[in-house]
Amino acid sequence: MKRGTQLPFAQEEPQDRAFLEQAIALSRRALDDGGKGPFGAVVVVDGEVVGAGANSVVERNDPTAHAEVMALRSAGETLGRHLMEDAVLYASSEPCPMCLVACYWAGIPRVVYAANSRDAAVNGFEDLQFYRELTLPSAERTLLDEVPVGGDLHADAAGTLAQWAAQLPETVVPKL
Image (tube, rainbow, N blue to C red):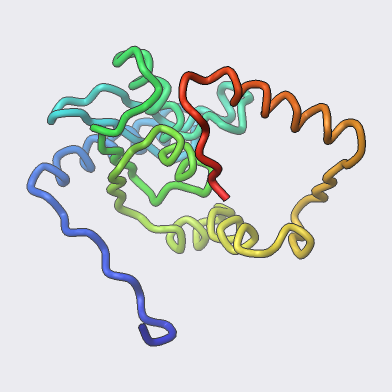
């Protein structure tokens, strides 16, 4: 692939517009409701909304209360499970790195969004800056200090992970 060429995006599906309109409506309501962040998201399974969320960071004093995370939390409660391999997340804007990884953790196979990270950056949101920062090796990142600790503390923490894996019913496959 030539440098500067974008990867192709997945095709829109017929139902995408209706669910994306719901996510955008949530973002508008959040904006109109006391200056919350202008982001909304819905989680859909089998054509039904099972979770919805609006940005609640300031209201909850919770930096993780992004619309997508709130929608995933709502869907988890509705579905009674944390894995959502049969779901689609619709978001008013391209998910930030945290929200995108939350979708990975939930096993969401498809994310549909309207505004992109550049639109967010133009309007003062750091998403694009965070995406760029995360592409760097940890030693080159500048937004915070990452301090890996060795010795007995590392051994204790790594040992706890190994103990957890040893208790699982199936052998763990390393994800290196």
